[in-house]
Length: 287
Image (cartoon, rainbow, N blue to C red; front, side, top):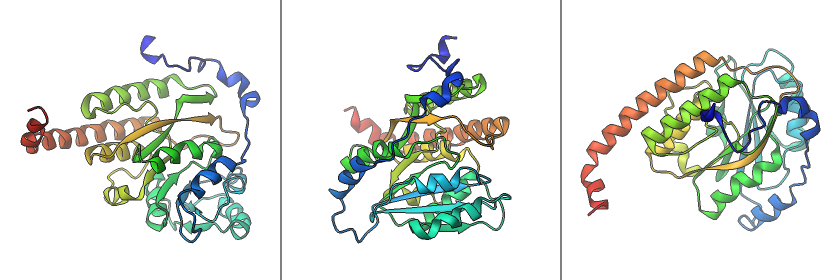
């Protein structure tokens, strides 16, 4: 199917060699040297890394251990009322790494957990990262660099610009392509991997996320729509994405699909309304 083609065309057989392609370094020298140019005082937080956690006892401890450790970086782990030992695994790492730990008394969902992290973050750049072990923290550098350079307000990790080392379900690929086409048609933005949870944005965007409608996994798409409507620039950056080694995805595809389609419809109407209410300003651009 031509509509499913991408630069990375190996998605049909990548699952066979997932262990051979997993390559982690976690050196962070390049990242540390770069952020030191922007935050020489070491007294303020430049980057806040938010990790939403729900039943990831097998991965969250090692992920927290392998994140960058720097005076200008704070790490916030939010446990969304896990029913396994995730919170205990976080506590094992918390003291030595100075990690801020938050806990929901009831399960609130992926987006709501991200929002809890955002409300407690103090960094000038806020990064969100999944806690299932699919993301490589080395790629953090690629996400924050365009923001610090001033060329982008919001960056999103993309497996299609980078690489992914597992078999991608056809239903997932079809949904992403459909969403990509609708984003381009209705909002004029080209995002290939709109649901990727490894992303970063300037603190300036925090107020526009205050009243999110979708607090499940469609939160990722809604972030893009809101940032676009407010005129912030979005850039996809290459990252590496690996297969889960433990557990399975918490996403319910049919519910996610309905939420994404409804969000596109709602914000599409808002976009049309904005165009009509600002028609004089738009006309000036072409005169």
